[in-house]
Each structure stands twice: as structure tokens, then as C-alpha cells.
Length: 282
Image (cartoon, rainbow, N blue to C red; front, side, top):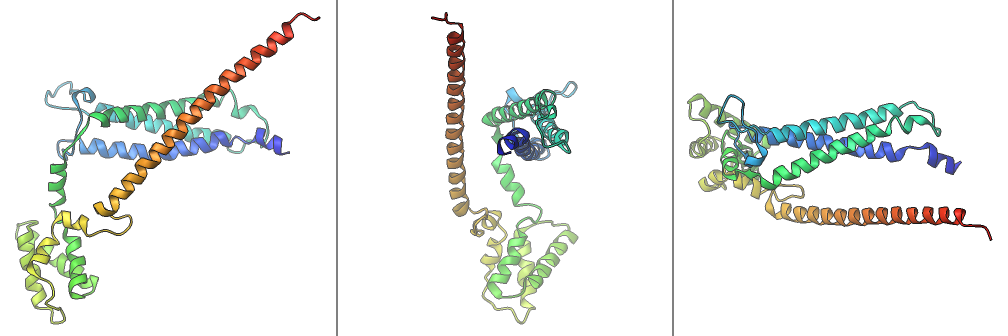
């Protein structure tokens, strides 16, 4: 019965297709972000000339067409992997043709599209340039750092996060109402004014602390908990990921070598068997 289970089960298809589906979902979402980043409005990403296509009507355009190919190839691989599971759903637990000749071409197509998508993305990123100055400027705009201001008020003067959130929210509304928008110095002045009216507040927070909490870099640096964005905790994770990639690459190369050697050995044994069958009888 155990041997029959090994024949009847097609986990090698369903498990690999499931892994492929999850990978392609993440790849497609990543490609979508890269496409958005490459627009003129964001200008976070610039692809090399080899990986853009000009518009048929607008000479200035740099269409990120290869990223669109990455996205559609990932979508195709995702849908093909889902189709594989659908084809096997409600089939009997038996040695059957459903998992063989008619299905396996779909499996090959799914992995071929996934491989093409990944290889194309690797080529794109190998020559891409990220506009980190533009990213840093965007992080400093549109009131993005004010969450840390609320957290700073909680840590420094002991008010509740609800009270701090309310105070900062009112400061944002005031700046928008007078048409200033996000200005750290104006924001600091409003917060100092409002804190002076809170009798329970301790004067343990300074002007510089309030102003510094409105820097995007400070927002990142103070978040040193595991999983946070600070370089202190992020760098070890990057090193761990690189080590894992190197380990996976080593395993993959070893597995491919083993497969190639097994193929050579199998062919040699088949030839030896044929020769022994065709040898003249003594």
C-alpha cells in the first residue's frame, strides 16, 4: 500500500505548483511597485536604455516594457500553477492519466514562464538605478514623519498615545488649513504651544527633541526592535538573507550535478543491459 501511495500521490506536482504560485504572487506585486516607481511622478527608479521602450508617439517617454513582461509572465505562471491544482482536484487517489501526458505540459509551461520572468527581472535590476535622493525627499514630505512625533511625546512626557495622536492630528489640520503644508519648524511651534496648555505634561521634552522627531531618518533610526527598519537590526537580516541565498545556491548546484550524474549513470546502465542482451550466447 505504501508503494501504491507513492505512485498515486502527485505531491511532486501539487507542492511545487503551490510554491510557484506563492512566488509568482510576490513577484507580480514587486514588479507592480517597480513599474509605479519608474513613472515620472514617482521617479524612484530609472531603467537602463537596454530595458526601456520609447513611445510610438511621445519621444520623451521611457516605457518600462520589460517590467510589464515580468508582470504578465508571473501572472501566467500563477494561473497555470492554479490550473494544475484544479485539474487534479477531485481525481481518484490512483495511478491515473489525469496527472500524466495531458497535464505535464502545463507544468512545464508554468515553470518556464516563471523562469523567464525571474531571469528578465534579474537583468533589469542588474542595470537599474534607484533615485535614493528622491526617495529621501518623499519620506520627508506629506507629514509622513509625524507618527514618530506622537511616539516621542508619549515616551518623553508620559501622556497617552490617544492624547498625543489627537495633539499631532490637530497640528496637521492647522497647517493644512493655513496652506503651509508640512513644515517641521511650524509643526514644532504648534506642538510647543499646545503642550504649554497641558498642565499634566512634564517639561522634559525640548524644542530640539520635537524638531528631531520630525526627521524621516530619525523615524527609521529609533525603531531598533527585531523586524524594525533601523540599520542596526536590518544589516544582520541582510547578511542572513545573503547567507541563505548562498546556501540555497550551493544546494541547487549540488542537486543539478547529482541529477546529471544520475542521468549519465542510468544511460550507461541501459547501454550495458542492451549489450548484455545482444551478446552472442556461448
